[in-house]
Amino acid sequence: MTETSHNNNERHRVVIVGGGFGGLFAARKLGATGFDVTLLDKRNFHTFQPLLYQVAAGMLTTGDVCTPHRVTLRRKKNVRTLMSTVYDIDPARRTIRHEAGTLTYDTLIVATGVKHAYFGNDQWAADAPGLKTVEHALRMRRRIFHAFETAELTSDRDERAPWLNFVIVGAGPTGVELAGAIAELAHRTMVDDFRAIDPQSARIMLVEGASRVLPVYPEKLSRKAEAMLAELGVEIVTDTLVSDIDGDGVVMKGPDGERRVASHTVLWAAGVRASVFGEILAERTGTRPERGGRLRVAPDLSLPGYPEIFVIGDLAAATDRRGRAVPGLAPAAIQQGEYVARLLKRRAAGKPVRDFAFRDQGSMAVIGRNRAVGNLPWMTVSGFSAWLLWVLVHIYALIGSERRLRVMLQWVWKYFTRRTGDRLITGRPPNTRRLHDRDAGETGTNPPDRGG
Image (cartoon, rainbow, N blue to C red):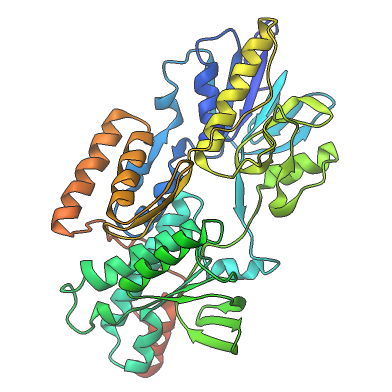
């Protein structure tokens, strides 16, 4: 095993695992300090997750929501970035193992986030992709637009219907935003783009196990969100749990019993679990994960019994010094990353450190054009004003002035033209073969390889 650390032993070595909001902002805050910082991530870029659904719906490109770590941190000469997957840790020796070797740390910051949970049915992942990474967003985009293209090819009405049925499982903010985006595409944006099908005939179903959408929001906002979704033609199915998913549809069980909906496009927006490294960390430190695989941390965000290991972001089950549970949101991860960086700097200077305090900035969910709801600390907002506030907040939160300007110009253009240009279908979705196999059976020949 090769030692990949380049650290000077006289400097305090900080290793950050995960380049999401928490990890990246911790690295930025530790830049231009006396610390020797190494940021590891299996990807070489940061993803602005709140806008991934727009990549999935073809509203934005991957370059609009992703920024290379090296670009963001290029002025931080004491920060090194490595594209490598961390797969083990030895807390006693304070070392981590990754693809290219080992690193020794004095302080470890774990910000690896969470991944999708299918409630013990991991086989559903193949037919119901989630939305946590840019790869997931591209996979969703491929399925969404491929469904419309295949429906255009299909002359049989019964065979066409499953291609125009879209089922989103989970009505939290991600599910609501996905449902609204697909409804905008089908019922407004692409109305004149096809000849054999009417995109407005697409059926968009939003399935939620709770009694209302956005169950963590105040009921008043949930009802407004439901009304906005209904205006866009989204069918809301609440008090209903999914019992099975395959490439041809989904089985749901609700108040009226069990039923099956034929659909070739099922999208997952329900349930999370710890990242793989989060599970390894829990095992190596003897930490018992809480609900969703999150790890309980001390008020200063360190792992109990391991004051040199900090867990931040979605992976952390944290309660701040005011006794409030810290939500798994991007603003919380940013605040935690910056807090740990300040804590380390104050400790190095021999200054006292207060426990973490979360500044609640609220949360918002956009529901198509001119529609959004927001649960803010000082008020609730909905409709056009909420949508406009959502736009401004997300433009400001993007990393890099060039990216902010580009996204803003694209949104302005698409707002007035209703055009969504990034509908490229790359690669072959897993369910493409159904149509091809049927055609091959009818003609006795193999379907041609159409490439990407």
